[in-house]
Image 1 (cartoon, rainbow, N blue to C red):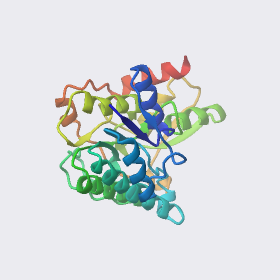
Image 2: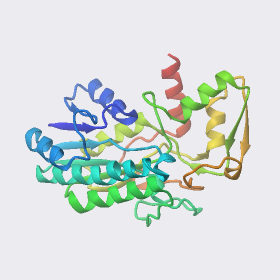
Image 3: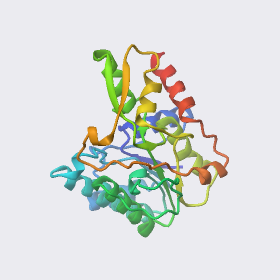
Length: 281
């Protein structure tokens, strides 16, 4: 099977490459140097030449605050919307399956209930809007696709909340973290495993939610990360920690559809413990 990975040097793309390497699965890895997804003609030509059967579309602009203002706003639109549309259209022309990674930010994050895969998106920041428009492009242009929404992503190969907390703990004995934003942390290992699971088990095409099980707020997550460090973590409200982009207050993704597939879903506590063990080793 001819596999193509976009954004192959990013946090998720790198995790996926390592997973496929461990399984001795061949693939072609690209980043913006090998394949500029915002160039429609270049994408079409690349797909016509390589003829991938599966496209793991990991490429994305993920600077949430930068997306609120120029020039980040334009890059967000160009990569997350136009680039995704180019990938979806080219994939469909060669009959490829698209695996597109989306986000809990497509939802407003202002309801107490968990968001099901059928819940109506209502993004409240530019990043969420662009990722939702990317979802719509995939649904409109590709016949065979998996849209996987995830949240609070961390892993070994990129910048993320876990590394930020660990690094701050090296230079601070007191930290403050917001305690009024609730969600589900997602280890890139779990996410990459589910991306391949969709194809290995020929799941029905459509939208899935993937994060580690159980939920928490950022303060609770930070406490778990730093439980063995000599640092005091104190809770603060979002109002005390203003940011350019709106952050969902309660964007817990419903995982029932994913669980029904038989995929083994570790809790976020189990995933974090395994991740910490790996990076410490």
